[in-house]
Length: 193
Image 1 (cartoon, rainbow, N blue to C red):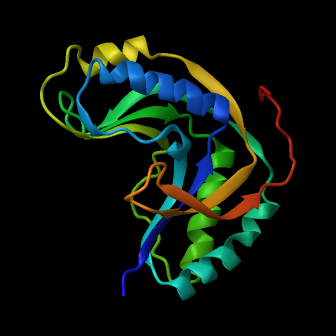
Image 2 (image 1 turned 60 degrees about the vertical axis):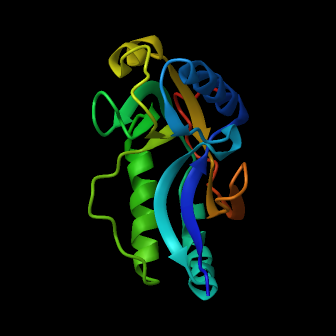
């Protein structure tokens, strides 16, 4: 029996989807990657679950209801970054500024899921929005460092929901929302609406 893959993430608002989609179109002219996520698939991952049986995903859906007790908060995104080799990075991303509220949400997700059989991640949490992955060929017209200077802007948005997504690798967009959790309306001081 084939198990579907799932992950938990913060969806980004449509205005930022459009902005980062524009970045992707421009970046395609300068760097060579095999995969460019659809704009509706852009998100901030909180936890990748991998292949999960239907009964276990239902346990995850149930236990994550507790995150609805967390207050909504603001997060700053932007600035181009990379994972992997400096000249041929495996992932190109838009950065996410880590703040206490984001870490609280991430830790709550990790802790809740550990009670229903999911492992806790040992690596430090590095939130980001993947714009491209799987370096293709060395045909770049510009260095990643130069690109990072070019795409050096920040935007703030309100994190007010968390979603469990099911992955459909053969589709585009390939992420299907299977559960959504609304965060409490809280103190959004410093947020931009």
